[in-house]
Image (cartoon, rainbow over all chains, first blue to last red; front, side, top):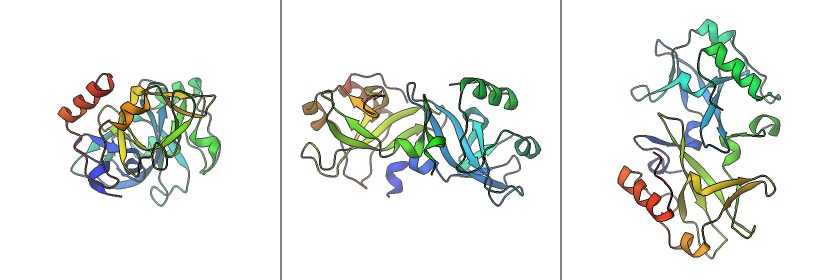
Length: 120
Length: 120
């Protein structure tokens, strides 16, 4: 995979987003993006699914986060979350490989929890 | 990877989009999605990069297509392109692994070629 192709100044390949590091407000790495959930019709990324395995004392659970809560930080070379760690820890999550209900009601709940508008 | 998690009625995981089949107007499979290019800031999918390897008599070249030119067809279980094959064949392409200039000017050119609005 040529890195020339999958990332530019403002576009990033989906295969490159997967695995991208996620940093906390203090710049410490706290996890990585497992996948992003794309709205099939609008083509908009609704949620990033984060894995904090090995960080925060959290196992392999996956945490869906509304896309707008992640800011790309070019200096860090990854996404930065300004949400306090404690709020993340208590946030909606699902076990790796488990089913997650992405219904509209659930999505609104997620947006409400993180204080971001529901997109999808 | 549990399929329960990476696809719902309207959301699809980025890892699931990669490799999804692409069909022509007649419903024949013509290729597959290699990756999608996501705008880091807006979180919107700008382009899908298609591979027609083994189809259309085209080798491993990659064809960037504006996202709006792909329609998800639930019956086919993949994306459908209504662009005539000949137009696809003559469209902008790059060799697998080669550098592709995703500049704004290039993006506009792609939108002009396929008659879709430039998004990113």
